[in-house]
Length: 238
Ligand code: FES
Figure 1: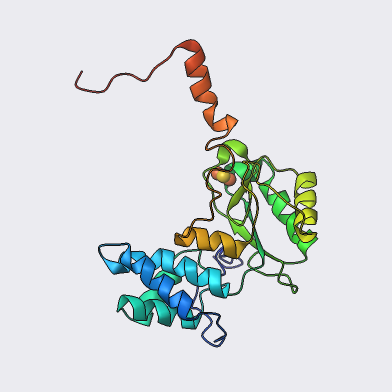
Figure 2 (figure 1 turned 120 degrees about the vertical axis):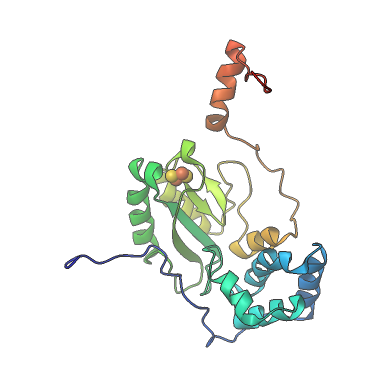
């Protein structure tokens, strides 16, 4: 293996930055954390949405957020931290107002995902897992978003930007930087990463029905089947 080095695409892996003790968590946050915990027969089942709520309030998984989840659920901070550092959707450092993801898994890569990531990185002046100094953008190299039929795909605050091109990516970032109204290619209005995190926590913003539930490319097989009168074989024993 000499001369070769393993390069992780998950540089966020590791512990939460315990030295940054800043927080916006207040009594309202605690009340909402308790509300989330009360939604499940086993309170600790609420930990994942609770961590999304922490991110919506603090812009990252903060030490105070970890302690708050542990206190509400009656588990240890180490148990909360273990979960928070396992999943890539939980950030150890503050994200930007807009969190940009570029998929570079196989299909998106061959359709231009690597070039898109390079271009977006250059335009923002940051590398993946970094945030711009003005706090407006953070960037992430994404694994497959299960939207391969729209490759190459980007995400903004977890909303899809399908069939991206370098020109569309430039325009998208310019519009977001100018605080212009931007819509996902599937219809949803782009708000902010923190607002999206609050929705993921389980506090809907009323926008769930913006745009279609499935795009044309995903429905192509069904359209062809409808046109030709094809149907799935009946189940049961042969
Ligand atoms: S490879 Fe990019 S969405 Fe599947």
